[in-house]
Amino acid sequence: MPIPALLWFRQDLRLADHAAVAALEGRPVLPVHVLEDGPDAPGGAAAWWLHHSLSALGRALAERGAPLLLLRGDPRRLIPELAERIGAAEVHAGRQTEPAARRRDAETHAALEAAGRRLVLHRTALLHEPHLVRTGAGKPFSVYTPFSRAVFTLLEGLPPPLPAPDRLQAAPGAPEGLPLEALGLLPKPPEPDWAAEFHAHWTPGENGAAARLATFLEHGLDGYAARRNEPAAAWGTSGLSPHLHLGEISPRQVWHAARAKGGRGRESFLKELVWREFSHHLLWHRPEMPDTPLRPEFAAFPWQRDAALLRAWQRGRTGYPIVDAGMRQLWRTGWMHNRVRMIAASFLVKHLLQPWQDGAAWFRDTLVDADLAANSASWQWVAGCGADAAPYFRVFNPVLQGETFDPAGTYVRRWCPELARLPDRFIHRPHEAPDTVLHGAGVKLGRDYPAPLIGLAEGRARALAAFATVKGTE
Ligand code: FAD
Image (cartoon, helix red, strand yellow):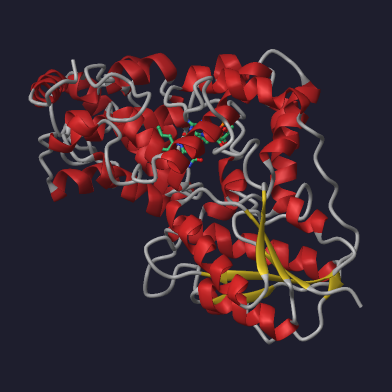
């Protein structure tokens, strides 16, 4: 009888193209997922997704003969205990880049090693290992363009994805685990069911991910370069981010499928997958990124923390329709279009002078794709304090951004229905509409829709003045 192994699923909740699954084919395995408590536990929306993703993975594993064991607690203790119980010599898992996960893995490995076992990590979440991509001088990259050039070269010979196994052999001796419901990942009464609408937009799980990729390749990829900035476009972007975040599909599957499909949008789409790699590369080398500005001079930035302003932004009540539409799309669906994420984030940190960490925390709790690497790298990019950031003095004007990328106001009308009857000319600037126009559209500012929290010129001037106090950033 071959020696059994633990197959520890974390952010790679799939069976196809899974290096750890493939490495264990033909050996008795015990698949396990451990829900960890503490600061790195998933936020509300990501927890909703995790519930459904575990449900789908559980079904797929059970069909193949090796049911998924669910545990809750500290893996440093639970995984070595479980390995001992079933006599596993090895624990196989996918490598993670989050600093707490890396610490946890090092400690789990040490605990296993002390008992003569080992933790074997595979590449399951990224196209290339973040610690193996280096500049000519052997250093980590801090700028996207040279990083992407290096990655595109490294990926030229990327092997094809691995197939999912037909059968798995269950290791004997598994203890009884928790039922999925006991993990408490769904909204709990008396809390309102804020996820009520999520099912209308998403199908978590490996099959849902494959279906989404197929539809995007069919309807979105060709027009991707042209339409990826239009938040109202159907299939303007792939919507694969929550599936990629939990590894229901591998970036290698997406990469190869997009390359094979071809078409005009392909290179532009592949570059976005490389942005994902870049975020993880940054997090690997700068583990302080989630909390600390990568440009140290920004530690002294004079933020003006204000709970009421933060709340108005969170609720989609800033008075700027494109920002509000984005924040409401986020609340209702757990996702926001990338262009609108940039506009909404910029408005918070620049016009409202709220710390980017507060915005990142809200996104972390409300995004189904909340990803420590992409979220913190993107917030730092918008705030101007990241490695390869947008210059701080480039302040997005939410009215002009809205008019450029949502010219007919389709996106705004969908998420801010109280503005739906405004003519195109004023849909992004209701505060400038004459009373007769507002009246005709049934809008009273301050009653049906808020007046702007701050004037754009005033907000911009205040942001630039705050920026000028930060030394060495010109
Ligand atoms: P597509 O345009 O179809 O792109 C394909 C894939 O490439 C995405 O699924 C994603 O995995 C990756 N990708 C695309 N853009 C980026 C990017 N800028 N950085 C890193 N990866 C990217 N993305 C997350 O996955 N999780 C987050 O928590 C997150 N937080 C963000 C916060 C802010 C303030 C901003 C401006 C961006 C954030 N992003 C985050 C990046 C980006 O907005 C999303 O990845 C994208 O909107 C997902 O939609 P999509 O799958 O349709 O993307």
